[in-house]
Image (cartoon, rainbow, N blue to C red; front, side, top):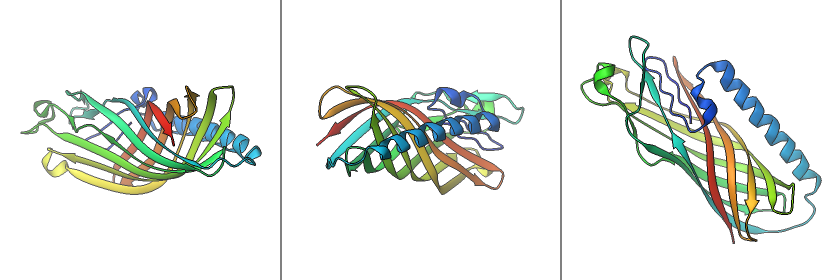
Length: 220
């Protein structure tokens, strides 16, 4: 995921492209996800006649990396290991469309070296998102599916340990994602996915959360 704020700037990443902090690159990433999601939803809609109602649950994991810019403009990276995760549950309306809800978070707070940031304690950052979405799926092979999510997400980001620069921000924004699922059996699939949970602003602070994760999904 990527999170950005001004004085300080936080950039937790759960996506390879997230290492690029420019607004231009962020928009390019979002546009790619939008295009992929739109294509998958259109293809799914073209063949949604067969009913196949059932539920499913899933879990996805990915790395979470972050950095803060100090007063001298130097980037201070996190000094602990944190895993980004997502858990979700869904209900298939038919073989191509499903409704889904989930929670995205991390296994702990990102910690930074307070001495390099001029703080008495080590600052910590925490972020999460709840989402609800429509999911479209289209088969591209005997055991491979493409899927996309379009919905809304409630983002939350909190920074503590920097005194007057501490802050907490929440916001509801459109979310979207796209991925590939490999069905290893009728009930189990392995997934690789990219997601954008929206861009939240508060004053001169900006919070962006993108994720790239691998996971597993179980049908029932």
